[in-house]
Length: 390
Image (cartoon, rainbow, N blue to C red; front, side, top):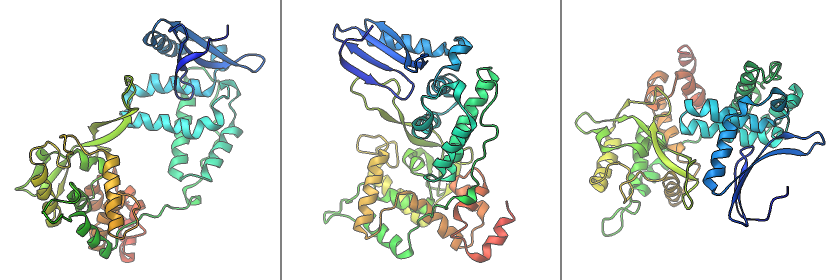
């Protein structure tokens, strides 16, 4: 039966289905589950009086995909199968940011090539070609994450006997040495001085031009990640001991249960990025103390050290936008706020700090990450000694 023309349609992601309102004000939802013998897409449709009703029916169907006959699953598209695996098995175990990242990896890197391939038709050559093509455009880290995501899903399919074998078993990920290393950018001493001067400028009446300009100075003198910095509360600051405690992270995640009129994404506060990053103590230098005290003078009535005027953390996009304005005014190429963190690390290495200390201050999971990230800016005489630590 052919659908009537719709007056409202909610487009969902790859393999997630679509929901629409019909002319008679009833609703339908559809999801592609495979292909018919003639090669045409095979879809499952659900109907209801309200949007909530068809959403519930679609959700229940996806939960029961595991119980479909094996021959039906064999004809199911990879995209639909992966969506079910992600929602049923991965979502309950991951932080919202981690789940969003897996979903985006599937949508951006796997779906464009393999979205409509049936599970029974997956083969090693197609997957190897996918990884080879990705290697020409993206970093080794990106390609490896795609490999791990797809391999985990197909191992799951084998464990459930939805596939007889994993076609990725013979696959090889291109070696890291075959990828060009992305060069990190740090501020020179002259650029750093100009940046601080601009970030802390005031109008003639004494009001700060950049309301939280001192936050960038704090980042420059502590190496905090942007999410960690924006999550800092005054209760995390010990003025007597001159230190701050890093315990959480502000992140942007998909607003999955949003109501009409609400944004697609929302900011939430969650635990820090890694176990090493969480609950770490960061001592404050004179420059960092000056920055915190200046922010305390501005935001003392608020919860967050880098608070907006409505007592909420400053949105990352607004923080990044102001950073770029400061860079332009200071005559610096605005390469990204993360360069302040890199500059902090590079200064420590120039002063002779060892890789373990720098790794702990940055909240890296291990010293290998620190070494691989900053080997190109470490003094030559330190490289051989630092290598021994790993």
